[in-house]
Length: 208
Image (tube, rainbow, N blue to C red; front, top):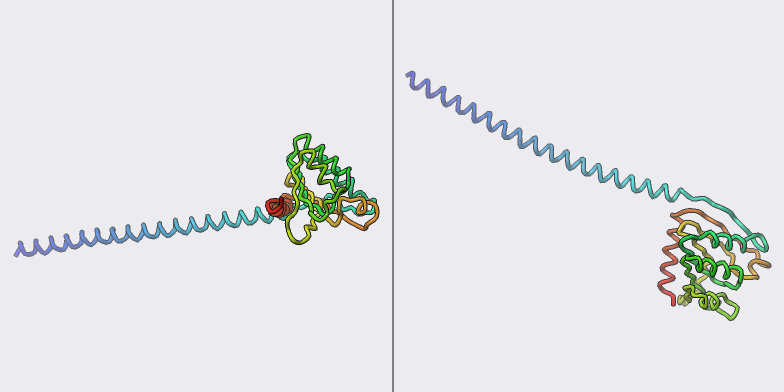
């Protein structure tokens, strides 16, 4: 009888211990699964925060725009402003221009090239006449190309150091400076400049 009771107690003890072990094992597995879930959620939140931070940075760049001036012709300072900003370039000058016959701006580009600034100019091919600055710039060793688009390349854009953009209706010609009603706007913005640089690179790579 005593042996039977002892055996019964022993069985209960074994069952109890096994139950504890199984319970602990189950709890540990569930705990690990929960930790893994939390870690996954943390990683997802970190990725979301990084994405939001990146978007905020992009918006800040887009909002970081300063209009440095607006000028009009005839004889309202457009030519002088183009020359001024060319003289301020330290790294690069990229140009897309329809009509370009003003020697004064040609001189400024040649001077910039001689002081080590990268100068690249895309001309509208239909406007390259004997009066065009294309020939003089090319002779001075400046990189010049003809737009090969079947349609007109009607841009009038000057990009300085990837930061300053000078653009508007103003061609670099005597008529635009002295007789026509034209305009330019001068913008300081790395975001705006990058957009213009992208277009410049596309047209430059398609030109000859």
